[in-house]
Length: 71
Image (cartoon, rainbow, N blue to C red):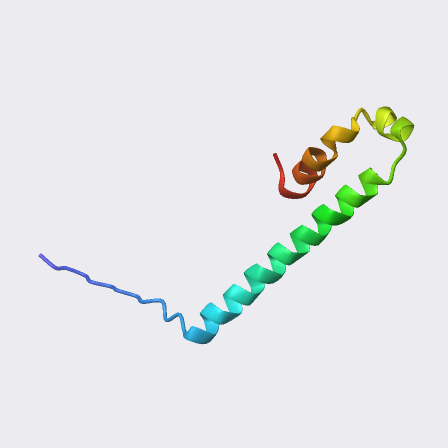
């Protein structure tokens, strides 16, 4: 009977971890910018325009959050 042992290690260096952390931070920052931009654009609409979209002023934060981050 023969056994085959194949262990492959993933060599994640400190530089890889730092790069990954900066990338994740940049992605979070981009999402926050998109959220704020969406929220501010909705807040800038008139009551009539919001009503045409089916959104009340109290729902702006929720709608912007869902549009940016998903349900």
